[in-house]
Image 1: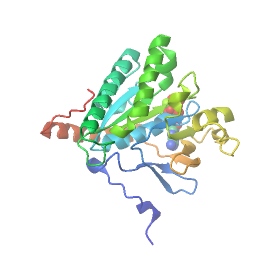
Image 2: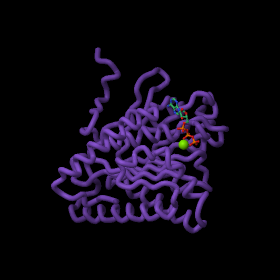
Image 3: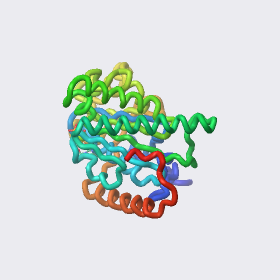
Image 4: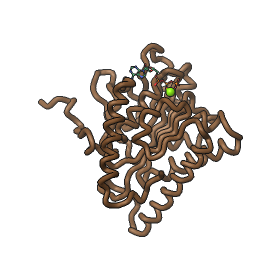
Length: 284
Ligand SMILES: Nc1ncnc2c1ncn2[C@@H]1O[C@H](COP(=O)(O)OP(=O)(O)OP(=O)(O)O)[C@@H](O)[C@H]1O
Ligand SMILES: [Mg+2]
């Protein structure tokens, strides 16, 4: 009998693709859980210290090791995703103007890709496509959508994020965003609904859990408020199964991230130095 650990097969290193499922953690039986990210967006929510940034680092790590994926990283805290800076096409710290400028450029890339697909009479990108995939990862979403800048700027940021979440999937753009409580003042409901995959780390109450996972899950017995506050990284994942499953997220220490990020950066530098064709979809 083959080991359940052997499936699904996910290659490692520079042959990894964002089309390969991400190893996201262990279920309540200790079995590995894998998650397909391509053509999807994922929202991470939960109280301070729940483990959102740690999980987002896993998503970024998978994308950084994926030979077919460019990284656009936006981090209101600077240090959560900062270790991946050398791997990123664009890294944005706590700077709303830079974040808006970056999303506008990403929107342009998205429009160009649709024009290209249209010219080819195609509807979406596929695994062996020439177009590179792009991971847009945003940590501390609330910093940009509700904390700094004017209301007009915050709304502009959210509108851009909504457009990319809505139209980006078919052209290979995956949006992964993390925020403590994704209520409507932080993330417009119309944007929140575009995140098909959700992970709720420990939440302070049932209503906060429902805000992350979607209304009604508490009444059906799924509330992230029941998670032990000391069990960081434990959460409810709402994804392929269609109902939330308990998930202890995989965790990389600071040193782990540095090791993986340095390796991914060196692979990327080598590829860029040997590239014979320019990356026409680059955001940078
Ligand atoms: N999967 C995990 N396994 C073990 N420990 C974890 C895990 N995830 C997070 N932790 C621990 O919890 C701490 C807080 O996690 P993290 O910074 O990801 O929380 P957060 O939800 O992003 O908090 P904040 O809202 O304040 O940004 C980490 O520094 C780490 O020590
Ligand atoms: Mg965090």
